Picture 1 (cartoon, protein in one colour):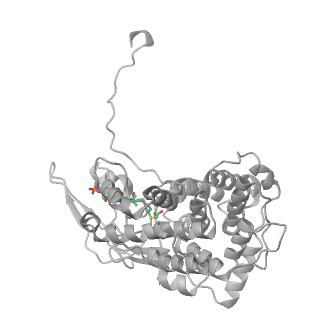
Picture 2 (cartoon, rainbow, N blue to C red; picture 1 turned 90 degrees about the vertical axis):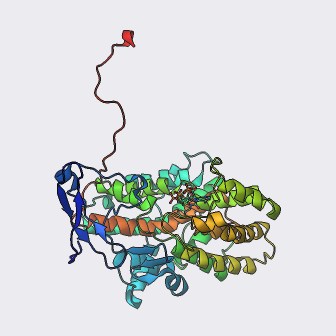
Picture 3 (cartoon, rainbow, N blue to C red; picture 1 turned 30 degrees about the vertical axis):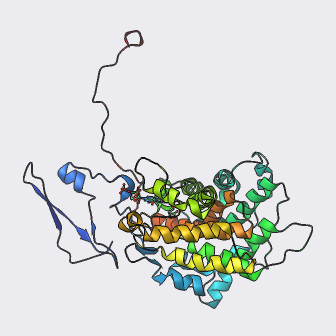
Length: 434
Ligand code: CMC
C-alpha cells in the first residue's frame, strides 16, 4: 500500500452528525483513492457503484491509463513506443516482470515460451467433441478451461514455480489452441508450432499454413500481427481482467481463471466489438447510408450503437487506435488492397462521427477495435476469429495481473455487497394456498 501525507477524507452522516475519516491513498500517478475498507464497519453503509465507474478494485503496478489525455502506459512505457520498438514477447516479459528484458533475458524468455507452444497430443481429440460450426470463442473457453485437466503439475497456486510454468504455458499455448480452433472450423489438419518462428509468425503459420507445402512468412503481415498483439496485451482492470482476478481471488487454478476471462472478453461491449464493427460496416454497406446509422446511434429509443466507438476510460482518442490505423494502411498497401469498401465506410464514418455534436459532447472516439477488424479481414481471418486473436494477446495481461494478485499480501477473496431491493421477510405460503 502506498504511504502518503494526505489528510483523511471526512464524511459526515447528516442523520447522526457522526463523522468518519476515510484514509486517502495516493498512487504514483492518477487520481487519489479513498480507502473505504472500514466504511461498513464504522458507518453501517455500503457504497453503490454498478459497473465500478469510481471503484479501484486493487493496487497494481502494471498498466496506467489517463483516459482524458488518451495515454496508455505499460510499466511506465507509452504504448506507442512499445508498439514501435518492441516485439510482443518483450512486452509480455515487461508486463510479467516489471522491466524490459536485457539481451540474455529476452533470449531465455523467447526460448522458454517457444518450447511450451506444443499442446498435449490428447487435446487434438478433445477438439473433435465440438461441432465444426462452433464459434471459436466457445472452443477457446472450453479448451483453455480444460488445460487444468491436462496440466496438473502447474495448478498449485501456492507454488511460485508452478505459477510461473502455468503462466508460460498459457502464453505459449494460446496461439496454438486459437489456430487449432480455426483449423477445426475449416476442416484442415492441425499444424504444429515451429520453433524457428517468432510468436506472431508461428501463429500465422499454424493458422494459414498447410502440411502440403512450406509456409512462407510475409514480414509485413507478421509484423502487423505482432503489433496487434502488443496493442491488445493489457488494459488495466477491464471486464475480462477483473473477471480473471475475481475468479483467481477464490484460489481457482490459473487455467480456469483465464477461461473465465475469455468468457468475459467475448461480449460485444468488450473484445467482441472487433467482430461487431465489421458486421456493422457490412450492414451500413455504402457511404450514403452512414447518416442513417449515425442517426440511429444517437436515438435514445434505438439500442443501436456505433461499434468501435466510445470507451469507459478513454474520453479522447484511444492511443491504440492511432497505431492500429497506421498498421491498417501498411497491411492494405502490402496486400495491394487499394479500394476496400469497408475501409472507405470506416474512414467516412470516423470523419462524420468525429464532427458530430453528439459524439463530441459525449467524448466518443474510435477505440482499438475500430480498425483491427479491417486489418484482420484483409489478412484472411474470418470475423469469428477476431475476438480469439484479442484473447491470445490479452492472455499476457491476464496472466501478469493474476500473478500480481496472487502475490499481493492484502489480497482476499473478491466479494462485493449489494443494494437489496427485493422483498422483506415474509411468511411461507403452502402450495395449495398460492
Ligand atoms: N454509440 C452511440 N452512443 C454511445 C456509444 C456508441 N458506441 N458509446 C456510448 N454512447 C453513449 C451512451 O448512449 C451514453 O449516452 P447517455 O449519457 O445519453 O446515456 C453515453 O454515450 C455514455 O455511454 P455509457 O454506455 O454510459 O458508457 P460506458 O462507459 O458504460 O460504455 C462502452 C463504454 C465501450 C461499452 C460503450 O462506449 C460502447 O458500447 N461502445 C461500443 C462497443 C465497443 O466499441 N466496445 C469496445 C470497447 S474498447 C475494447 C475493449 O474494451 O474490449
